[in-house]
Length: 279
Image (cartoon, rainbow, N blue to C red; front, side, top):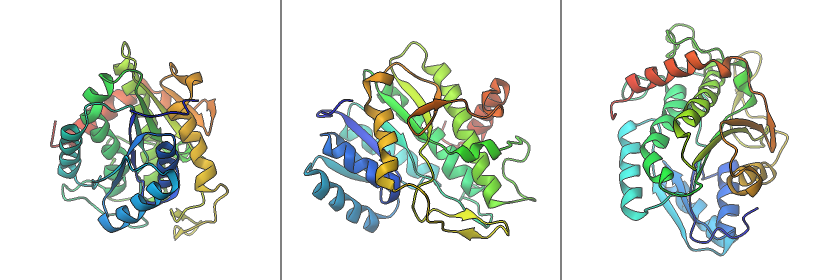
């Protein structure tokens, strides 16, 4: 484990609460310059203060990005690149679930837009900085709910049969397909990418009950305990050269059968490009 992350630059999205905040605190405590990414400035300021107090590391930055708005992602990346010339660790953790179908300003179903397209655009725009940083790492926070995902590329927007639980599960499957596809693209570089199910975390993140109502379960693992798996993937020397894998917490496992479908991964990549206005 790299106990000293001095001179390392880390980005943690979805870092104002839960596992994202817990992870940011630990990375900062290890000496990293840690960028907290939030769409709510007030919540971000509270999180920033908490990270600095916990880590006693004032090399912590707060930057704004709304992953449902593609222009906001572009603005974030432009600002980041003006301030920093390297990126050692990128943790894509921001996510959402909704019991009602919503659309972005571009008419894209919101869960797909935030949970998949957000990661897709954000990571691709930062890829040049990542690949020029030796042994950089990309962590995709997925979920074991991807096993319930069933992507229909002709119905990604779920216009007529929306179900919040299914939309979330589909987006998590998309995360893993993206991980495996990007791993192929990264071959030959020292940048790695892995996906992780961090466990069922005690947060205010909603899941659906059998009546399709969003509920807020107690969860089984505290954010602090769950963050240890993200820290492991981000810093452990044991997996420095491991890429394109799925982890259940700190254990490498097989993901769903559908997640290994290369034809589906390629088609999803192309569909994703079609939904992007910035490439």
